[in-house]
Amino acid sequence: LGPDYFFGFGVVNHPPGFDTNSWIDTALKPAQDAFPAWVNAVKAAYDGEGVTYCAVGYCFGGPFVADLLTHDWLTAAAMAHPAWLEESHFRAFKKPVMISCPEFDDTMPVAARHRAEEILSEIKVKHYIQLFSGTHHGFAVRAKPEIENDRWAKEECARAMKEWFLRFTQTD
Image 1 (cartoon, one colour):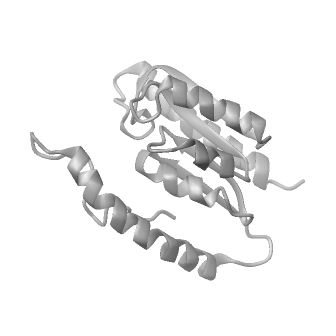
Image 2 (spheres, rainbow, N blue to C red):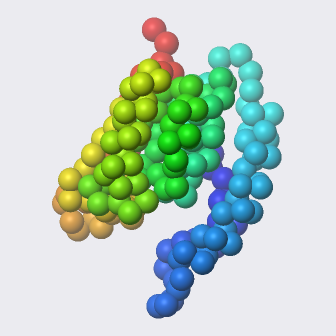
Image 3 (cartoon, rainbow, N blue to C red):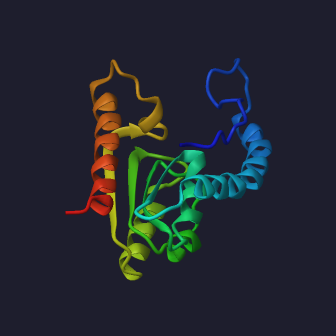
């Protein structure tokens, strides 16, 4: 399941001159307002004995998943090229988190990634951080299939997320 953070108006395939930053400024608040109700609706529909919840966030969805990582009911989470995360987000994590990072990312620069690693180690939250050389922000959703490295990174990110979740949800 996934919320439509953009309410039908995606962030790709826009005309030349489209101002992504302005669009984000107007899109973020409605998504923040709608997300808690969406989570509550999912839990109301699916809660029950043996139900586990995992969460994935790409870019814009990173902070939403970061907030879910503060709840005891979440089993594990994964993020790819998350945007706008602060140290306080990482310090509040309670559950295992996987983060897939591109080599080049203005939304989570190298220093921020390293600081996230330090914090997660300090607070002793299980974590796994992937770094894909030669990739850029968005690789996990917008990789160009004709570029072998991009295609491999996207596919490996998805495969690793699946395995990450199986690690915490499979029972013997």
